[in-house]
Image (cartoon, rainbow, N blue to C red; front, top):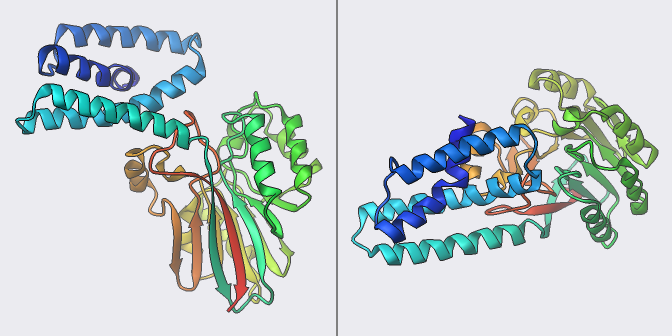
Length: 337
């Protein structure tokens, strides 16, 4: 299965363009395609031996994903219209190049988004920042510097981080000292990637030493808000029980959790849930597949007086590419109703 996916992403799109211009057709069973399929098998064996650069692999997957979609549409147009093959080739090749270039550009851009929430449980105006899916490791120290610089230009009361802060043990944890530069109260919960690391416990300790408070299935009252943090390494049922146990009846209950799934079970009991994980699919049309798994894929949802916000994430995972989604910093204005 891995070999088939590798072939479809790394060879199929470009063979499509070659066949369109060289033979005015596309024959999936041709000798050329079979030879390239064998090359795919060989490359998979190389990857399993860790001889291929990881960045090259990630970008190959990202570019291949966009190219597979565009070239498949080109085949469809070729087989359903009477348009010239050369015109189809030129239009879709140019579109392919444009979308890949645009995706790589978008992967480095950070968008600031604003939402306002009102509640009769809130006495004073508050402004706070929510970040999720930073993916330090996939993203560099320089990317962390860029984010710190942006945050230092914003006026806000405190910062919430919704998991997947770090996704690689190769990231030098001494760089987490940079969070001290924010001089703000910071609250953090784990995502799935924190549990893939070899040094998770050490990272959590370093975060706490640098002013990032890890809400380990716990809650605290801050600025008259009850902030509940739920770890990612547990079932949705466990998260539900914890959230209901930690909520405070007469306070604004804010739940920080990596995946959005638990909101369906607690939305009649809590006021605000902040999550991420989905990346809003990161690269179109993958977001269509993400929506099949996650009912709440991106943006703001409201029900029973409760609000859920699912972030598209601050950083990219794998290839630093975005198409149909954005890296985002969420600014939340909470005000009395």
